[in-house]
Amino acid sequence: MTFTSPGPIIWQFGSFALRWYGLLIGLSVWLGLNLSRFLAKKRQLDPNLITDLSLALVVLALVGARLYYVVFQGSYYAQNPLEIFAIWHGGLAIHGAILAGLATTWFFARRRQISLWQLTDVLAPSLALGQMIGRWGNFFNSEAFGVPTDLPWKLYIPYEHRPPELRQFEYFHPTFLYESLWNLLVLILLLTLFFRYPRLRPGTLTMVYFLAYSTGRLLIEGLRTDSLMLGSLRIAQIISLIGIGVGGFGLLWLSYWRRHLPDVISPESQDNNKYNKI
Image (cartoon, helix red, strand yellow):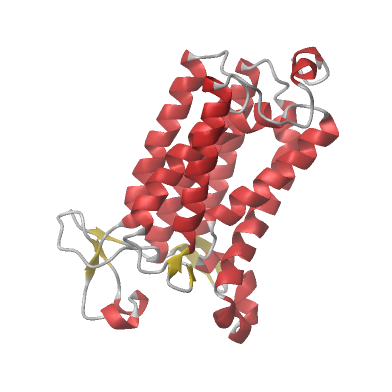
């Protein structure tokens, strides 16, 4: 099976173009919003909390994803400043989105006096779902691919999208597919834990997400040809190691030491806060 992108544009009329990247982001947001609202109801949380949070979360996560990418590609954007705003050309870093999303959710939880971890636990599956869908945007843009390969599931990359040092090669590892499938497994894991163990301490699913996603990203990133770099180090692998550490330590804290994660409200308030319950 050889993967070949049909191109980034679905339909174009004059200067207006409907792009796969934007469509997939919109689909991810819509499905994620509905999934998190559904999960919130299952945890007896007011689903309107998710709706109230969603606009700021999506906008600031996109801004964070773009700024993170631009910072580590500063030399290119210094020469092409208008490209900073052209997110339809690709260049969104999920780690920037996660950091901005966490900060946004923290401020929202503090203002509404609800547990940060209760919120992130119902948002984490939607994040994995969005990543699973969003990676196909890389496919349509012919970006975020791996090193050359002759494996049966190879990805054809047009000449103009190949790195200069690899232009003699036509086929590359479809790392977008690897990560999409990995995120599917993360999503299944999170939903299985959510429904099978409804009394998990707040933050458990969030820590599982950090550990599971970061493990896959650490491995897959080693195949990429376009990694954001800090000297000779791949930034995504550094952040993934931190994510594995945070997730692993958080699960020990919750399950082995049986303590609550630091939160914006006390554990007792989580049970007594009727304002945010259905």
